[in-house]
Amino acid sequence: MDEPRIDFIEELLRESEDRQEQETVDMKKLMADKMLFAVATLDGKMEEVNRLVEEEIRLLEEYRSLELARLDKKRSWLEFNLEGFARSSGEKTLRLPHGTLKLRKGRDKVVVVALEEFLKIGPTLKLVRTVPEQITPDIQAIVNRIKTTGDIPNGVQYIPAEVRFSYTTNGGNADDTERERNEAEG
Image (tube, rainbow, N blue to C red; front, side, top):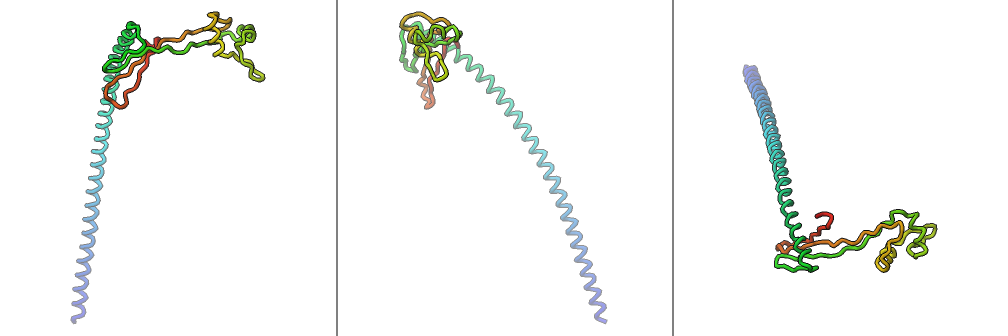
C-alpha cells in the first residue's frame, strides 16, 4: 500500500518540477523579449547620437571653411602690403624683428614657339643639341645668347625672369615656413 502512495508523491514532485521548468522557460522567454526590446531601444538611441554628431561635424566643417576663408583674405591683404613695402624699400632682404622680407629674381625663360622657323637659324648659331636621330633646341644656350647679344632668335619667345617676393615669420612655431608670392599672383 505504501508503494502507490510513493508513486503518487513522486508523480506530484515530477509534475511540480516540470511546471517549474516550464515557468522558468517562460520567464527566460519573457526576459529575452525584454532584452531584445532594450537592444532595439539602444540601437535607436545610437542612431540618434550618430545623426546628432554628423550634423555637428557638418556645422563645424562649415564654420572652419568660412573662418579660414576670412582669415586667408586678411593674410592675402597683409602679404600684398608687405610685398609693396619690400619693393618700395629698394633692398633685396629686410630683416625685421618678426620675420624677413625677400625679393629674389627667378630664372629667365625661353619658349620655342615656332620650331621650324627656329631650326632655320638655330644650327648656324649653335643653339641646338643633336641627339642621334633628333635635333632639339638647347634652351640654356638660347638664354645665354639672348643675354649676351640681346637678340631674340626667330621662332623664340623670351620671358624675362620675375622678381619674386617671399617672407618668413618668427612666430615662435617650429613649423614656420617661408611663403612666396609671384607677381602673377598679386
